[in-house]
Image (cartoon, rainbow, N blue to C red; front, side, top):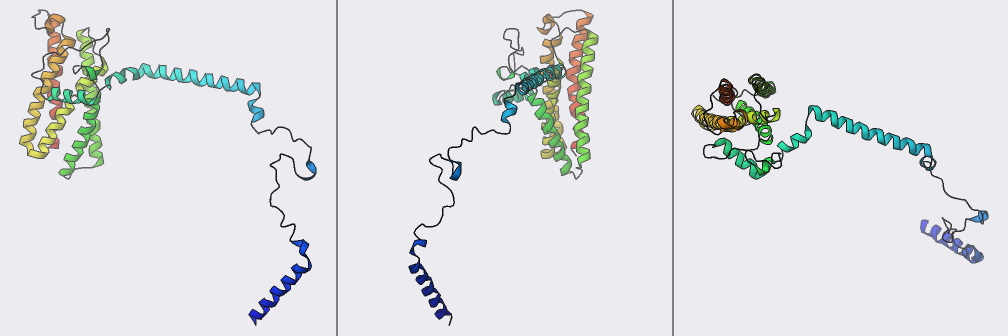
Length: 301
């Protein structure tokens, strides 16, 4: 029955089309009007709409708005310059860039010099037009890359050592890092005070002292790693070697900075002030092994 009903419906639709053939001639009305000729549709032909105005166009074309934008830009520039100037007074960023101007070759040679300084002959820093050359061009120039990376590595190795002994906690690791940083600050401040009391006329800066004091982390890392691999015997042997190396390194480096030119060249110079400078140089160098042992002996069992 359903099929018969469909056939009858189709026949009725065909008859209707044959009776009204003009209904399909025009075809369906287009969904969109043809605007390719540029003429407006329908009864709006010949009427110009004029230029299209965007919401922010009037604001940008306003002279007062342009003046305000220029004034705001000048204020932002002045504020940035003032911030950079005041920041450079407390944190010499331009100088810090010098201490991080290193490359892989320099780091390798410097680490070798810190571990084995006995065969090195020339310890003078090279200068170019009264300015010390970048560390990557002179192995004797101080840098901050090795001390910073050494400090971070020391904290990680300390955490590893504490973990192997089931003593690791975030609090203990934080105390280990903070104590090492505090002792470094105390050492630098004590050195600055000693240089002031002895009235040493030197070109050593605070950043130089931080760099020289931070080189001991290399020996501390080697000592702790040797203790993890070979026990306390390996720790003491490795630490002893590194302590002697850093002592020799500091003596040969600082004598050119603290002692007078004649005394630095090995000439015996008599005088109380020069003896004080010599004692100060030896004290700074001797303090490095003390800190190295103090900050590592409890990490190896």
